[in-house]
Length: 336
Image (cartoon, helix red, strand yellow):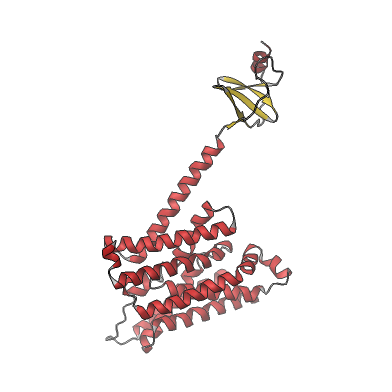
C-alpha cells in the first residue's frame, strides 16, 4: 500500500475515486426512486458526442462534454414535461443520437489528432492530472451542494410527482435540476469508470443500499458508503491486478450487491423461523394449565396471551399462533 501512495498519479486517482464515489450515488438515489436507472447511459452517450466535438475543435473534452450533457438534460425534461412524447422515447432518441453524433464527428477528426476515446469510454483514472482533479472537484462540489439543498423537494417529486405538483412544488424545475445534476455527475465520472459504465456507479450502490437501509436517509448513507468503497477499492485492486480501473470498480460494486442480497435473504429466512423466548412466566404449562393445546411436531404447544408456548429445556419458546386450531390429539393430550 505504501508503494501505491508514493505515486503521485495514484494519489490523484484515489482522490478522484472518492469524489465520484460520493457524487454518483447521491444523484442515483433519486433516479432509482423515479425508475430512471438508465438515464445515466443516455447522458453518457450524449457526453461522448461532446468529447468528440472537443477532440475535433481542440477544446477541452471535459468542457464540451459538460455542455452537451447539460443541454441534452434540459431538452429531454422540457420535452417530457410538455407531454409531447414519453420519457422513454426521449431517452432513446438522446441515447442513439449521442452515439451517432459521436461516431460521425470522430470520423471527421484529423488522423494526426490524439483521438483516443478509450479513456472516456471505459475510464482511465490514472491518466487524470492535477488540472483534471481540480475540475472534477469543482463539479463534484456542485453535485454535493445541489443534492443537499434540493433533497427534500427532489424526494417529494421522486416519491409522488402528481402529489408534489398539486402541493405547489415547481416539479418541472426540479426535474430539470435533477437532470442537470445527472449530467454533471456523468462528466465527473467519465474518466473514472467511463461513459459506458457510469450508470452502474449511480445505480448499483443504491440497489445495495435499498437492501441494507430501513429509511431513505439510511439508504442514502449506505449508497455513499458502498460507492466510495467500490471506487477506492476498485482503484487499489486495479493497480495490483493490472486491470482497467472502470471495470474493476463496477465489478466490485456488483460483488457488494450480491453479498448484501445473499446475506439479507438468509437473515430474512432465519427471522421467519426464529422462535421467541418468553421472558417471564407466572405458572407452568402442562395438561392441567387449562390453556388450549396445539400439536406442533413432536411436542405440544399451549396457546396463552396470543402466543403458543412450547416447553423447552427449562424455559418456554413463544411461537406465533397462526391459524392452528387445537387438534383432537392435542386436546386429548391436554386432558390426559
